[in-house]
Length: 271
Image (cartoon, rainbow, N blue to C red; front, side, top):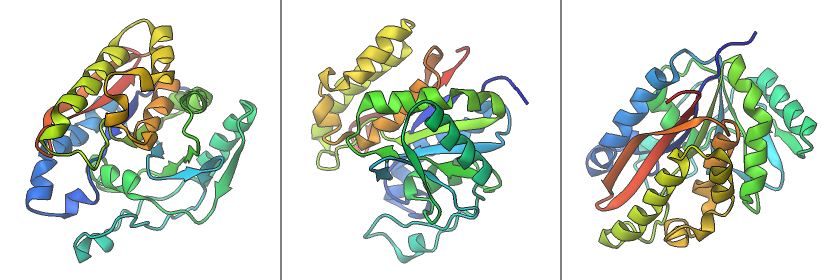
């Protein structure tokens, strides 16, 4: 059944299991929390499933979660004991996993299934804020080692048709991710990269946008903002699946962890 294409999203998912850490950690994420809570309204209808591309899963080939009831993967350390008891009991979607696999294979992209993988925090943390009742099936799709932006743009292109079938494509990472530079020293480089990202994504020359993203390392302060680019690459999948769609920044702040500039973007048929 064909329906109007759902938007795709690139979201900043914040630090660790922040929704379950009260105090300063939770307070730091108040603006992000409000933006994520707004996302169902931006989507406009209830998705039949979510295809999640998390910064926290990399494989030699693009790999698809196929577990019908994915377990939890607490891929963080040093947090309170309660954060290792968090549950997000969303079902998997083996049929969607098969469809994702077939679309990638048809595009000439090598892929495989992982039948045991659980939800990592790049997936379950934002999902618990966006859709807290955990009723929507979720399938995770890994990044590919090497983190080639062209590879990830191509994966997005291969999944575009899912948008017309009620599948919400979410790229989950962070527009600024330098854990060694989160204090005042992050102010200038994070702002410089964030300004470039907004200008690049919100421009309407879509061919230039794709070219610029493929060459993102040339952006101002690129390698300061992303010493390693795994938190940026989910953006490429979201853009690839909406390559000729308008980008809208729906979340931005320049005081994240004190001075950092971070943003989240929606890609839709109309602004």
